[in-house]
Length: 267
View: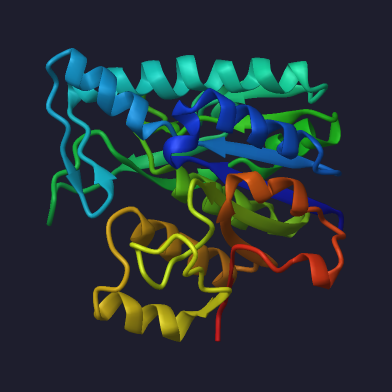
Protein backbone atom coordinates (compact mmCIF):
# COMPACT_ATOMS: atom_id res chain seq x y z
CA UNK A 1 0.00 0.00 0.00
CA UNK A 2 1.13 3.60 -0.59
CA UNK A 3 2.40 5.51 2.43
CA UNK A 4 0.34 8.37 3.86
CA UNK A 5 1.61 10.95 6.33
CA UNK A 6 -0.88 12.62 8.68
CA UNK A 7 0.39 15.45 10.85
CA UNK A 8 -1.39 17.35 13.57
CA UNK A 9 0.09 20.73 14.48
CA UNK A 10 -0.99 22.58 17.59
CA UNK A 11 0.12 24.17 20.81
CA UNK A 12 1.85 27.53 20.77
CA UNK A 13 3.18 26.99 17.25
CA UNK A 14 -0.05 28.20 15.66
CA UNK A 15 0.32 31.62 17.32
CA UNK A 16 4.00 32.09 16.49
CA UNK A 17 4.36 33.07 12.85
CA UNK A 18 8.06 32.22 12.73
CA UNK A 19 7.55 28.77 14.26
CA UNK A 20 4.54 28.10 12.04
CA UNK A 21 6.48 29.17 8.97
CA UNK A 22 9.38 26.90 9.90
CA UNK A 23 7.02 23.98 10.47
CA UNK A 24 5.16 24.47 7.19
CA UNK A 25 8.43 24.61 5.26
CA UNK A 26 9.35 21.22 6.72
CA UNK A 27 5.85 19.83 6.18
CA UNK A 28 5.88 20.88 2.54
CA UNK A 29 9.02 18.78 2.01
CA UNK A 30 7.35 15.53 3.12
CA UNK A 31 7.16 13.30 0.08
CA UNK A 32 4.04 11.43 -0.97
CA UNK A 33 0.42 12.06 0.01
CA UNK A 34 -0.11 13.96 3.24
CA UNK A 35 -2.82 15.53 5.40
CA UNK A 36 -2.41 18.36 7.90
CA UNK A 37 -4.76 18.73 10.87
CA UNK A 38 -4.41 21.87 12.97
CA UNK A 39 -5.52 23.24 16.28
CA UNK A 40 -5.66 26.87 17.34
CA UNK A 41 -6.95 26.75 20.88
CA UNK A 42 -4.80 29.56 22.23
CA UNK A 43 -6.03 31.97 19.54
CA UNK A 44 -9.63 30.96 20.23
CA UNK A 45 -9.20 31.50 23.96
CA UNK A 46 -7.62 34.89 23.42
CA UNK A 47 -10.42 36.09 21.15
CA UNK A 48 -13.05 34.74 23.53
CA UNK A 49 -11.51 36.65 26.42
CA UNK A 50 -11.44 39.83 24.33
CA UNK A 51 -15.15 39.31 23.65
CA UNK A 52 -15.93 38.64 27.30
CA UNK A 53 -16.77 34.97 26.71
CA UNK A 54 -15.64 32.64 29.55
CA UNK A 55 -13.01 30.05 28.68
CA UNK A 56 -13.60 26.72 30.41
CA UNK A 57 -11.37 23.62 30.13
CA UNK A 58 -11.66 20.16 31.69
CA UNK A 59 -8.68 17.76 31.39
CA UNK A 60 -7.36 19.62 28.38
CA UNK A 61 -10.71 19.68 26.57
CA UNK A 62 -12.73 22.82 25.89
CA UNK A 63 -16.29 23.35 27.05
CA UNK A 64 -18.05 24.91 24.04
CA UNK A 65 -21.29 26.80 24.62
CA UNK A 66 -23.16 28.54 21.79
CA UNK A 67 -21.02 31.69 21.95
CA UNK A 68 -17.75 29.78 22.17
CA UNK A 69 -18.79 27.69 19.16
CA UNK A 70 -18.96 30.87 17.06
CA UNK A 71 -15.49 31.83 18.25
CA UNK A 72 -13.85 28.47 17.49
CA UNK A 73 -15.46 28.31 14.03
CA UNK A 74 -14.19 31.82 13.24
CA UNK A 75 -10.67 31.01 14.42
CA UNK A 76 -10.24 27.37 13.40
CA UNK A 77 -12.15 27.24 10.11
CA UNK A 78 -11.46 30.86 9.23
CA UNK A 79 -8.29 32.67 10.17
CA UNK A 80 -6.00 29.76 11.14
CA UNK A 81 -7.09 27.40 8.38
CA UNK A 82 -6.82 29.91 5.56
CA UNK A 83 -3.54 31.32 6.83
CA UNK A 84 -2.03 27.83 6.75
CA UNK A 85 -3.45 27.13 3.28
CA UNK A 86 -1.98 30.37 1.93
CA UNK A 87 1.41 29.64 3.48
CA UNK A 88 1.45 26.14 2.00
CA UNK A 89 0.53 27.46 -1.44
CA UNK A 90 3.54 29.77 -1.18
CA UNK A 91 5.62 26.62 -0.58
CA UNK A 92 4.29 24.92 -3.73
CA UNK A 93 2.03 22.57 -1.77
CA UNK A 94 -1.45 22.46 -3.31
CA UNK A 95 -3.53 22.72 -0.14
CA UNK A 96 -7.29 22.69 0.37
CA UNK A 97 -8.79 23.94 3.64
CA UNK A 98 -11.62 21.81 5.00
CA UNK A 99 -13.87 21.30 7.99
CA UNK A 100 -15.72 18.07 8.64
CA UNK A 101 -18.85 19.62 7.13
CA UNK A 102 -17.18 20.21 3.74
CA UNK A 103 -18.16 17.38 1.39
CA UNK A 104 -19.36 15.52 4.50
CA UNK A 105 -15.76 14.53 5.29
CA UNK A 106 -16.28 14.03 9.04
CA UNK A 107 -19.62 13.49 10.75
CA UNK A 108 -19.90 13.57 14.52
CA UNK A 109 -22.45 13.16 17.26
CA UNK A 110 -22.84 15.68 20.05
CA UNK A 111 -21.22 14.38 23.21
CA UNK A 112 -23.68 13.35 25.96
CA UNK A 113 -24.13 15.87 28.78
CA UNK A 114 -23.11 13.30 31.39
CA UNK A 115 -20.82 13.09 33.26
CA UNK A 116 -19.60 16.49 31.97
CA UNK A 117 -21.58 18.79 29.71
CA UNK A 118 -19.06 19.94 27.11
CA UNK A 119 -21.72 21.76 25.09
CA UNK A 120 -21.37 21.78 21.31
CA UNK A 121 -18.56 19.23 21.21
CA UNK A 122 -18.64 16.35 18.77
CA UNK A 123 -17.31 12.81 18.91
CA UNK A 124 -16.37 11.48 15.48
CA UNK A 125 -18.65 8.76 14.14
CA UNK A 126 -17.90 8.66 10.41
CA UNK A 127 -15.02 9.62 8.11
CA UNK A 128 -15.38 9.60 4.32
CA UNK A 129 -12.06 7.93 3.54
CA UNK A 130 -12.94 7.56 -0.15
CA UNK A 131 -13.49 11.30 -0.55
CA UNK A 132 -10.20 12.07 1.17
CA UNK A 133 -8.40 9.45 -0.89
CA UNK A 134 -9.73 11.04 -4.07
CA UNK A 135 -8.32 14.41 -3.03
CA UNK A 136 -4.97 12.82 -2.18
CA UNK A 137 -4.85 10.99 -5.51
CA UNK A 138 -5.38 14.32 -7.26
CA UNK A 139 -2.27 15.67 -5.55
CA UNK A 140 -4.23 17.79 -3.08
CA UNK A 141 -3.10 18.19 0.53
CA UNK A 142 -6.17 18.52 2.80
CA UNK A 143 -5.75 20.99 5.66
CA UNK A 144 -8.40 20.04 8.19
CA UNK A 145 -9.77 22.40 10.84
CA UNK A 146 -11.12 20.83 14.07
CA UNK A 147 -14.77 21.50 13.28
CA UNK A 148 -17.18 18.68 12.39
CA UNK A 149 -20.96 18.46 11.87
CA UNK A 150 -23.82 16.21 12.92
CA UNK A 151 -25.52 15.83 9.52
CA UNK A 152 -28.51 17.82 10.73
CA UNK A 153 -27.14 21.30 10.25
CA UNK A 154 -25.17 21.78 13.46
CA UNK A 155 -21.43 22.42 13.65
CA UNK A 156 -19.50 20.81 16.49
CA UNK A 157 -16.14 21.62 18.05
CA UNK A 158 -13.96 18.49 17.96
CA UNK A 159 -10.56 17.84 19.47
CA UNK A 160 -7.90 18.17 16.75
CA UNK A 161 -5.87 15.23 18.08
CA UNK A 162 -9.02 13.12 17.82
CA UNK A 163 -9.66 14.24 14.25
CA UNK A 164 -6.10 13.37 13.21
CA UNK A 165 -6.49 9.97 14.85
CA UNK A 166 -9.85 9.17 13.26
CA UNK A 167 -8.61 10.23 9.82
CA UNK A 168 -5.57 7.99 10.27
CA UNK A 169 -7.68 5.01 11.33
CA UNK A 170 -10.19 5.46 8.51
CA UNK A 171 -7.46 5.62 5.87
CA UNK A 172 -5.61 2.47 6.98
CA UNK A 173 -7.68 0.43 4.50
CA UNK A 174 -6.13 2.33 1.61
CA UNK A 175 -2.74 3.46 2.92
CA UNK A 176 0.17 2.54 5.15
CA UNK A 177 -0.53 5.38 7.57
CA UNK A 178 1.90 7.10 9.91
CA UNK A 179 0.75 9.79 12.32
CA UNK A 180 2.63 12.62 14.05
CA UNK A 181 1.54 15.07 16.73
CA UNK A 182 3.72 18.21 16.57
CA UNK A 183 3.89 21.06 19.07
CA UNK A 184 6.44 23.22 20.91
CA UNK A 185 7.87 20.44 23.10
CA UNK A 186 10.47 17.88 21.99
CA UNK A 187 8.18 14.97 22.85
CA UNK A 188 6.62 13.47 25.97
CA UNK A 189 8.66 14.71 28.93
CA UNK A 190 9.54 12.62 31.97
CA UNK A 191 9.81 15.90 33.89
CA UNK A 192 7.55 18.71 32.72
CA UNK A 193 10.04 21.23 34.13
CA UNK A 194 12.87 19.86 31.97
CA UNK A 195 12.40 20.31 28.22
CA UNK A 196 15.26 17.89 27.56
CA UNK A 197 13.78 14.99 29.53
CA UNK A 198 12.22 13.46 26.42
CA UNK A 199 11.07 9.86 26.69
CA UNK A 200 12.23 8.25 23.41
CA UNK A 201 9.48 5.62 23.53
CA UNK A 202 6.48 4.73 25.67
CA UNK A 203 4.55 1.48 25.68
CA UNK A 204 0.83 1.40 26.30
CA UNK A 205 1.32 -0.32 29.65
CA UNK A 206 3.85 2.33 30.70
CA UNK A 207 1.40 5.05 29.74
CA UNK A 208 -1.31 3.43 31.87
CA UNK A 209 0.98 3.57 34.90
CA UNK A 210 2.03 7.15 34.19
CA UNK A 211 -1.58 8.26 33.85
CA UNK A 212 -2.58 6.53 37.09
CA UNK A 213 0.33 8.15 38.95
CA UNK A 214 -0.43 11.60 37.58
CA UNK A 215 2.78 11.88 35.54
CA UNK A 216 0.78 13.07 32.53
CA UNK A 217 -1.99 15.61 32.65
CA UNK A 218 -3.97 18.28 30.84
CA UNK A 219 -3.60 18.34 27.05
CA UNK A 220 -1.12 15.44 26.95
CA UNK A 221 -3.80 12.99 28.13
CA UNK A 222 -6.09 13.25 25.05
CA UNK A 223 -2.98 13.30 22.84
CA UNK A 224 -1.66 10.01 24.24
CA UNK A 225 -5.13 8.45 24.44
CA UNK A 226 -5.54 9.18 20.75
CA UNK A 227 -2.06 7.91 19.91
CA UNK A 228 -2.73 4.50 21.41
CA UNK A 229 -6.17 4.31 19.87
CA UNK A 230 -4.53 4.86 16.48
CA UNK A 231 -1.92 2.17 17.08
CA UNK A 232 -4.51 -0.33 18.27
CA UNK A 233 -6.61 0.32 15.15
CA UNK A 234 -3.91 -0.31 12.57
CA UNK A 235 -1.91 2.92 12.19
CA UNK A 236 1.67 1.89 11.45
CA UNK A 237 3.60 4.41 13.55
CA UNK A 238 2.79 7.30 15.87
CA UNK A 239 5.26 9.94 17.04
CA UNK A 240 4.96 12.98 19.31
CA UNK A 241 7.62 15.55 18.49
CA UNK A 242 8.83 19.13 18.23
CA UNK A 243 7.48 21.04 15.25
CA UNK A 244 10.99 21.85 14.01
CA UNK A 245 11.77 18.14 13.56
CA UNK A 246 9.12 17.70 10.89
CA UNK A 247 11.73 17.92 8.11
CA UNK A 248 13.36 14.79 9.58
CA UNK A 249 10.11 12.83 9.49
CA UNK A 250 10.21 11.46 5.96
CA UNK A 251 8.45 8.22 4.93
CA UNK A 252 11.71 6.42 4.05
CA UNK A 253 14.14 8.00 6.52
CA UNK A 254 16.87 5.66 7.74
CA UNK A 255 16.66 4.20 11.24
CA UNK A 256 19.63 6.17 12.58
CA UNK A 257 17.88 9.43 11.73
CA UNK A 258 14.68 8.59 13.63
CA UNK A 259 16.16 9.41 17.02
CA UNK A 260 13.94 12.35 17.92
CA UNK A 261 10.61 12.86 19.66
CA UNK A 262 8.66 10.12 21.41
CA UNK A 263 7.61 6.97 19.58
CA UNK A 264 4.54 5.10 20.83
CA UNK A 265 4.02 1.34 20.77
CA UNK A 266 1.24 -0.99 21.95
CA UNK A 267 3.19 -3.41 24.13
